[in-house]
Image 1 (tube, rainbow, N blue to C red):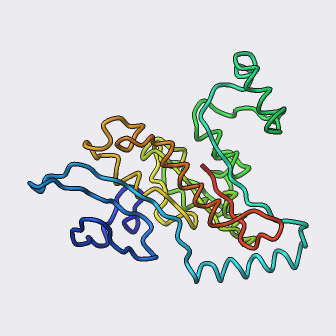
Image 2 (image 1 turned 180 degrees about the vertical axis):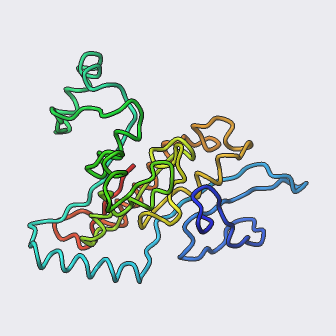
Image 3 (image 1 turned 60 degrees about the vertical axis):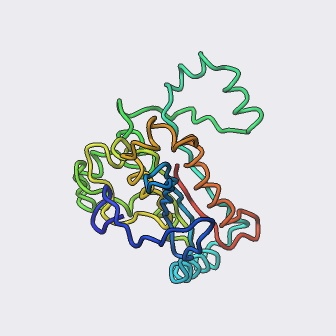
Length: 254
């Protein structure tokens, strides 16, 4: 992303044309590949987001993780992937989809949050408390945060659960699929600095105006948008395992 912006990208470099393959740098996180016909007309574009490891970042997180282990001696440290899905009301879900509910609880061992209820009528009033433990109003009135709900989300980034995880040495990720209508961007500026270690937003911003490949907003050419998003967090799963001997746990919100 362009420095100081969460809605504009900056192209770092453009490679020479190639026919079969090209070597990319280990630090390249977001790549746009464009194909041309014999008349040099663009006929397709592909967008890729890669999970890269920053050695200096790893050193800092490794030190924090060691302090966490020495202080608390947990039996195991599991990686956490938190999926947020806009859906129907909990009570309506129970009435309309009883088989799905039964499958989630009985087969996938899902936990039902019996006393959890919505706090507002849109995404932000519900997601912000879920991820910080505080409502928008509480964050605004708290002298520690002084949150301007229409400003930059950096003001309260340290209040989010991924920052708690980072302080314990967890690698962190945030996977978003929209530009303007996320809980962090609707009527807000988003983040002026990367809020987590791994952030897929650049390819989302870069591709959203691509009339050639984004003719339907839910696809990247012939690839479903949800597949593109899931591929990113699958990279996190492969990069940072979650076994009992896991030394590099991660927390990601999707």
